[in-house]
Amino acid sequence: MSFFGGLDISASGLSAERMRMDVTAENLANAETTRGANGQPYRRKEVVLQTASGNGFSSALASAVGSVPGATSSQQAGGVQVSGIVEDQAAPRMVYDPGHPDANAQGYVAMPNVNPVTEMVDLISASRAYEANVTAMQTAKSMFSKTFDLLR
Amino acid sequence: MPIFDDTQLALQRAISGSALRQQVLANNLANAETPGFQRSDVDFHSTLAHAMKTGDPNAIESTSFSPQVDNQTLRADGNGVDIDVESANMAKNGLEYDALISVSKARTSILRTAMGLGG
Image 1 (cartoon, rainbow over the protein chains, first blue to last red):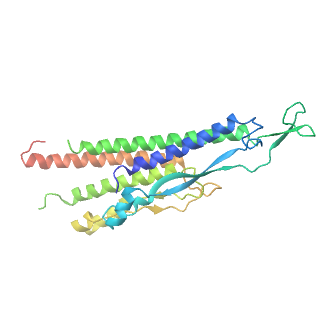
Image 2 (image 1 turned 135 degrees about the vertical axis):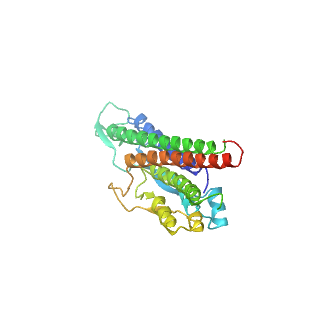
Image 3 (image 1 turned 90 degrees about the vertical axis):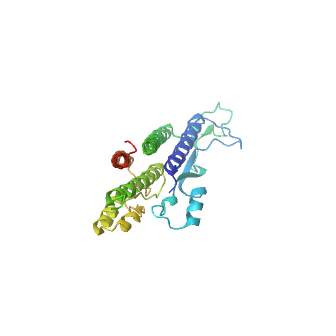
């Protein structure tokens, strides 16, 4: 059993939730961007999370050492990782604005498929999950320091 | 009589089980937003209680714990993690760990006193 495994798991959760917050912030910042790098309106991005398998040093060591009492399969717990950032394929919002430089022949402008309400909900959920991981990390830390008390 | 009796061995295993449970619960929280994730938990109490019923010190000392997957699903995306339940479990487990360490430390200090090493 890796001693600081709990901290690594919580850290993976923190970085995944921070990535979600970053992407949500990007979506909100680009809610009115009609010209992206490819000349198309901005498309809403979304983070895809997946369970990480423990592939660090400690899990490699544990599988090499084999069955140590108390070390069973705790190495499978590897936290979470971002498997990719995908673009939302929903159609762009068409807004009638003939004076806009990006308006088409009918006077409609293709606006990004970003809904600020959805983004705010995502932001709250990411922030709550972030807090939960911080709490888990604090619990792990206080447990470790308690263990060091045994040596005194 | 051995220096470390059944209770001390059981305390050591319980500390190890509680530490493993902390990791598993942290993993549940880290995957609170992962679609299709099933939560796991470690029931080290019943495993240890079962080993202690045998009264064999070797059985207690060699008790090993493994996480069990809980097949509950709470949300439409197949995720089975309830952040509040996980946090409560983690707080309980942390307190239990502290209690185990305190009892273990008190018992060790009794032994140290008996050896004339001072508490």
